[in-house]
Image (cartoon, rainbow, N blue to C red; front, side):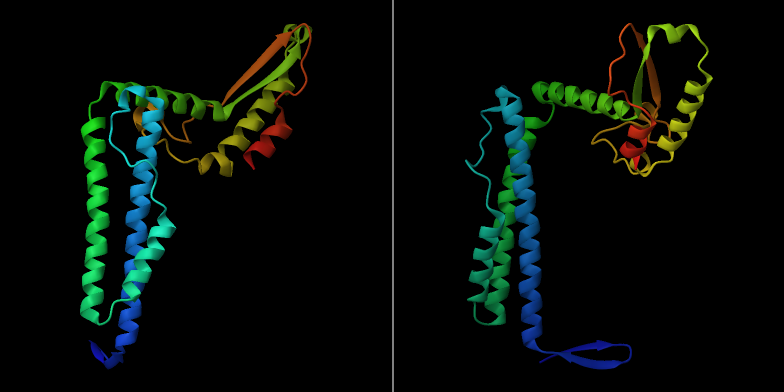
Length: 219
């Protein structure tokens, strides 16, 4: 039996409960380490596919199956007898997974830091994401060519109404930040420009973005 003291007296926790907590803690920690390794491995593989010059980076041929390895580690731990054996096995498992993750991270840093090919790729990717972010509040409407000669007060009022609804919409206010951003340059949802484009042509195309679409898109 194990005794734990608190301000209002003593209470006891059985060794079986302590062992169960150790098993739960071991499984959670191993899952985090395996998931981190899998995520980093996947990102490295993605970079190598996008940037052919990085094919020389040493990686395992396949991503580690998280649940399969996790179940194997759990079974091995449950076979241990005695608290000391359990503690030793937990230390071995954690050390091994930490070593694998640290090794992969070291390879990634050696290859990625200040690599001109990766810098170019990330610059282009960031630019694409910034342009896509600006398009979140871009709307257009097609009109017949004759209407451009008239004053369209209704259209102006409609733009103002849509802008107000978009600015206060849950979609815009809960928009996640960019992976890499500069608030002074990129701004946030509160400063994101809402752009309307009115197109005038001989033949009006169907499927214009109007108030109904905006309401559906934002809410």
